[in-house]
Length: 204
Image (cartoon, rainbow, N blue to C red):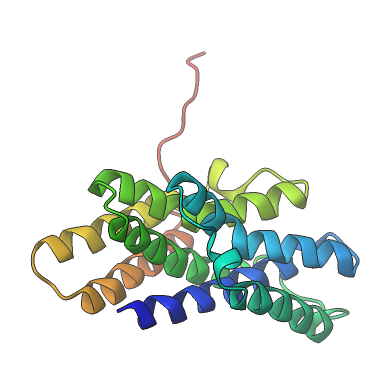
């Protein structure tokens, strides 16, 4: 199980770095700006999770994560710069990164004996904080905070499903893949059918 989570974590870092590059590219940032945005997107969520758990930050303990973040950022930057890409293109890899990081974050929290609700929250934090940092650095309102298709809710649903399946005796591996599939499915369906949560509005 540890090997599976390790590789999922590396994949999550790479995918989130890609989304950071695509979003920074829309803002016409130079290479330094793109590297900063890509790295923050890839490493931010897991960093906050580890700090809250009083755990050694994952990319400090294993610099492979940092290498993957930087390498992905550079490769994507030089591969796509100059190309005209659809503005919403980054939303698809963003949904994949959300699924990967949410489940890794939830599992890490469970391994550190976090209660189930805390583990869910830490999974959501791991999944969304990188995107929040990306959007802030790109000078826009974070995607998770604006009215739009389900985002953090999708992450919470997957994290809760993961914990619930394990509580029912499903193997950790099966529960992990199922949780990721739920996050991704809910997010993509919400994007396709414009499914949103109710918003606060004052009565006139």
